[in-house]
Amino acid sequence: MHKEGLKAFGKRMRELRIARNLSQEALAWKADSELSQISRMERGIVNAGLSQIFKIAKALEVHPKEMFSFEMPPEE
Image (cartoon, rainbow, N blue to C red):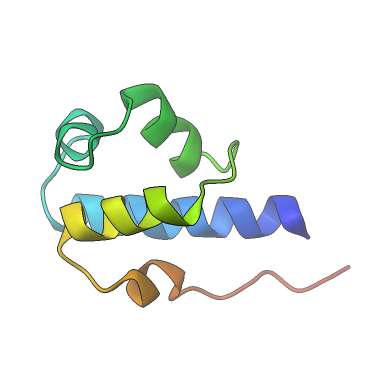
């Protein structure tokens, strides 16, 4: 389930980024993060820390809870 949750979080992050017409590069710059880290987060490969999530939420101009507004896939 952990892996599916990371993928769902990454998908939501990507949706928010695209809705704001930001490239991954622009988001990385605004959030003071590495481009590769943004890419890995969107693909659900890496588990971001809270401080990084707060930076990204600020860069996206959303409340951090908006980043967690997604449905978890059902458990098998």
